[in-house]
Image 1 (cartoon, rainbow, N blue to C red):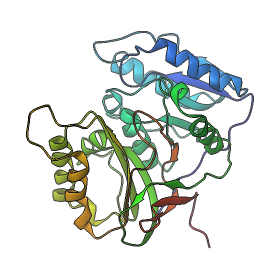
Image 2 (image 1 turned 180 degrees about the horizontal axis):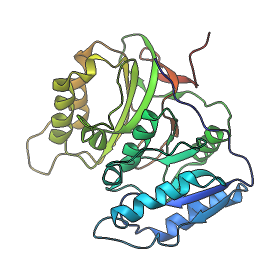
Image 3 (image 1 turned 90 degrees about the horizontal axis):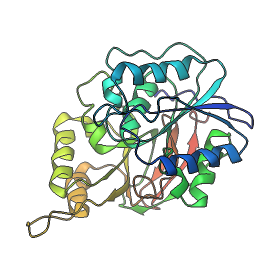
Image 4 (image 1 turned 180 degrees about the vertical axis):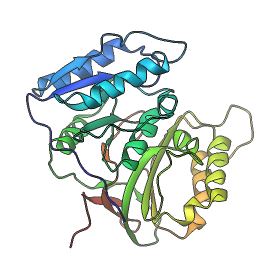
Length: 302
């Protein structure tokens, strides 16, 4: 089992750069509020000059978004990268992409940023599955503090959900958005799933679509490798009106409960808040009897 390298903890005065690697930015006021949260903590936040550009539904052309990411990653003065929003587009800039061999730095985001986080994990570096700059300001105070605890090197409190029974599993935490992760299947971006605790969430996907994706995972054989599953929010995942359907909760139970591995649901991460920050590629303990995810460690204890 291989855990990822955590970047050095951030401290006041560190420079962070804001990039738009995915969808076109629309929530400018929300972004500015979140930038001010970082600045109020003593960080220097540099916003890309072309952050307000768009190319269709994307924040900019692929080569420009790729350059934003590469420039921030290779900047020796930059200690962290704050993603402005999700949407769609990060997978496009990962074609023929290799992470430059520089000092590891923090990469923070979720939703479509899943692709970047998993690609970075493949390079052996941990990122943060957590609020983007268009959502951070709406997070509860405990969630905001958790994000800063993570990047500043303080211990993380356990997360509490609903245990499905099945005992305790320890493995490498791999959090992400189910839809984005499903579209990474059979690509070079998909990590090795041996000994993984898979943490997934989603939003605005009808139950039949969740069913279809989880069935694809079952058929791929990947669920036979993971040691446990942590389920976050599956918000606004209702069936269309007047159409016969299972609920999303019924779909999750039907497609996952027979896997014979520990599962915890209703954990506070994902879309629509709260979105508790999770480190990618660290060792965690998932207790499906107590309904907790805890002991966020950068490596196995001796």
